[in-house]
Structures are given as C-alpha cells and as structure tokens.
Image: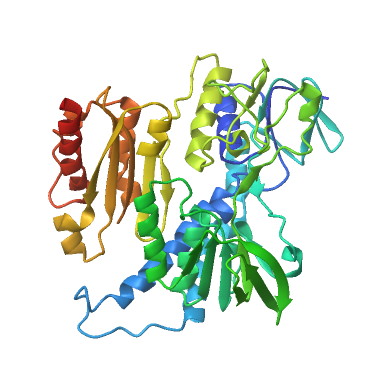
Length: 461
C-alpha cells in the first residue's frame, strides 16, 4: 500500500495543474490516469480544432485576395482533398501526434507519481488502481467528461464520429451531417464546409449557440449558411439507416438526408461511472456531475475535491484550470473561493463568437433590472480596412448598481477583444468609468464606446 498526501483521479487540464502545483510545494501526490496526460484539449479538442479552423480560414482568405487587393487576379488553389491533407498534417504536428510524452515527463519531473490505470475508491481514503492501493488524506476527482451518445435508432449502424474522432481522422468525407449546433458543432461544420464538404447541421433548439444572446446566435447561423452549411433549426434526427456505405438520416422536418458520415456533437457527460463514489456517499445529479461548493470541495465531504468538466460548471479548459488553482491553493492551506460571474465563452468560428456573464433575459429572470445597448461593427473604421462583414456587440448592465453584468459579440477576433468586458464584469467596474475609456483608432475595441455611453445615459435616468 502506497501512502500520499493527495491522490488525483484524472490527468486532464485540472488534474495536471493540481498535481504539479502540489508536488512542487513538497506534497506527495499520486496522479492516476488510464489514457493521456494533459487531457483532451491538447490532443483531440481545443488545439487540433483551432488548427483546422485556421487552415480553413486561410483557404477562405485566399479566395478573397482579389477583393482585398492582395492580388490583381484570382490565385489558383489546389483541390479540397489535397488541402485537407495538408491541414491535417499541420493539425497533427500542433497536437503532437496525440502523444503525451513531453507532458508526462514534465509531470514526473515536478515530483508527481504517475500511476497508469483507472482508479476506483474502495473505502474512505483508499483508491485502487489495478490491484494497487493508494492511500491519502485528500482525494481530488478530475476525470473530465465524455461525448454524449443520444438514443437514436440506427445510430450504431452507420458511420459516425464523435468530435474527438473527427479531430483525429485523416480522411475528408464528401458529405457530413452534424448533430448539434453548439460550439463544437458550429466549428466543425464550418471547417468541413470550407474544405468543400457538403455539410448539414441540425439543431433541436430555436438557435445555434445554445443560450447565447439571440441576435448573436442568428448572425452566427447566417455566417454558417454563407459558408454553404445547410443549417436546420428546431430539427432532430429521428432515425438513421445505412445507405451506400454512409447513412440516410430521417429528420423531424419530414425530410431525409444522405451523407457519408454523421458527426455526433450533442454535448458531453461528466465521467463519474465506475469511480466508486457511492463508497463515500457522493451522489451525482441527473447530468452525472459532482456538486462542489465555492472552494471546489465536494458537498458534504471534508477531504474530497473536484475540478474541471466533472463538476458540470462552465465546461471549458480555462474553467478547469481556474478550479484547479482554487483546489491547489486550498489544499496548501489558503482560503480561496471561486467567482464564476465572469467565465468567458467562445466559439472559434470565422468570425468568432465570444461572451461573458448574463444576457438581458437571463438577468431579468433573476430579478435584475437589466438594460442593454448594441453596436454594429459595420460602423467601425477597422471593419472597412479589414474588408470583413462586421458583426455585433451587445452589452448588458445592471441599472441599479451601474455595472456591466454581461457582454456578447460576433466579429473578427471577438474572442480576444471581449477580454475588456470579462475584466469589467469580474471587477464590477462602474459604467461611468467604462464609458470614459479611450481605445486606439482604428480597432475593434472602439465598439465599446457608443454602447457604453448609451448604458451610462440609461443608468443616470
């Protein structure tokens, strides 16, 4: 039996940060992982998807060279198959060919004891990994999430991809049905459409991008349609059947679609099955998530903590890293609490969608006197020089307190310049101050100035 101060189940983003931070402070830490150290983000999610999006964007920009006066006549592009192969090669280099060697070495060099295998709690304070027992004072659960498989008749009989599989595959399908209009579905739909894949996206809700501000979501849907994606809202796949090596999908709108491949991107489920949580009396919610308090301590537990997707809280890598820092600090004797009001969200399409905090309707449901102001990015000088289609910024404020509580945008690099709103929401900067901020000319940051002044007028009424 091996004794540790802390045992961490799961070596994804959160688990890696916690284990390394504690080990560097002299704690004896065991990190248990059956797959890759570093999680999915570097290998089959964030990094490879952004690499493919950039390649698709570069190809699209080349098609616009004459319009942007980068060339006086059209530049010949190679075929979609050849370009896709090149993009896949770059993607795999960036994703380190899905090998975790360097991350594993870094973790072990920090002093972490890496235990390969799947861990299971067998009794309080004891985790078993393939017959090896690890004891510890504290346990951290950071097992992440896994793609959700919807109960659709025939799904297991046709060629399918999860997002992880799509971002590991080398082949370019001739046609693709994307199930789900969330961030992953929208990003991968745009990538494939720009590489000449006939792409259909079906979303069961009234808009893509889930619960994001409705006008921003509508603009994103139009962006995808302009790229050739057949976007169908309030539509579901009722059943699937094999068809010529591919699939025939029967949709709720009464139509059928025949495609070579089906991409299932309807969400992710926290990975908690088989961990032995019942031994500790830990119950998961309907979603399978583990409930934590503001310290990231599992509720009704003294020495059990959780971080990352397994908590069901804002399931992004940056959230996992934030929660990991909270857990590590508390395990080292500090007193840190999470503040989740300003966790940014982003969809890395071209143009990007980014948001933070609450939209007006959500705020009003919580009893807040929410006011909004909007800016059309087409009015900016930078939009004219960039030669793009513009976008929109929507700001939401609490009239009573005079502070920003939410922002949403679609536009070039919105994922970057929305950071100003993230800071404003987190620090509760008064609208009076924000309305007095000077931005460089010409930049997309100037989009904040007119709506901030409008919000200030409304606050003062």
